[in-house]
Length: 419
Image (cartoon, rainbow, N blue to C red; front, side, top):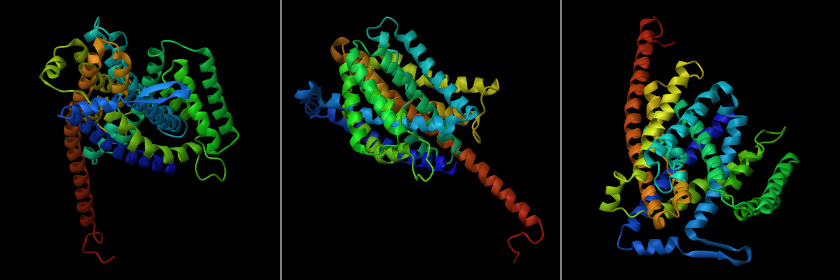
């Protein structure tokens, strides 16, 4: 348990720093595209990077979306596997609440988005845009404004977001696989089997694993399946339990190696290439009048908050799950608001779902809705967390004062005692 807590603390620290870098990258993209040099931003994102022998003709923006995010999803797969085997999700009683909350936080936004945007072009798949919570962004906000909230808040939010991302990954696989090449799919499956077998045989050389990862990514790309799924699959196939005499399990070693790259480079670069949305009076007007934009905004802000908090409250009241230690319902509501921060995966789904709608203008509008809503959720969540932090600190101060008074009231135990 000590090792699990240590790993969780390290994960939170890395994701917190990564979240801060992500915010900076998104801000740079927004300022750049809306500056007099905005054309250079568009030129950069649309610059092709071709690998002719492999028939890969992708723009720089596509490489960040299809390539760099595969590394992000690999880390998510490692974290999910660790949580399922030795972490919070390994205990059914502890796992119940974040899993139930994650399901509520996926279904409710999807239903609201469908209801608001029904019949709009692209909404046959666009309803999936508001279903995912951004782990790095949400944890960064929690770290900056919720330092006085009990540590169980971080565990709950992390577990919820990991399950949330798993559902989003499944949706990506189901919704955005249009054509399927069986031969390339079998090649990817062979790579996954080779990875699993190598883990079983305790093989540790990167000369085997790196080629398997690259070939599986390429095979899924050629099969017509979004290649980021290679990342999460390989993460889930990695061993997390220690062997006798082993200092670190493979999943732990890989997290230490890859997670700083993911949090500090891959996700911020994706944010830089995906967040450049022109913001003018027309866009802001459409945010609150266009049904597609309203579907994203209400799905995220209302759907996530109501879905996470409402289903959590119901599960606790019915005795299906237990409330995290030290957290009240108001704390959980503040965390539910943070769940409305949908950034990385939401931007990815927007690009996948709406790329061919209205010559790309629908993508820009949906991305603007994601950015504005995520910022609103982060500000509202921060305000609630700061207020709850003051409440928790006041309670701790009161308990400390009571203990001090009780100690002084007992002869020989006051401050003046020399014993």
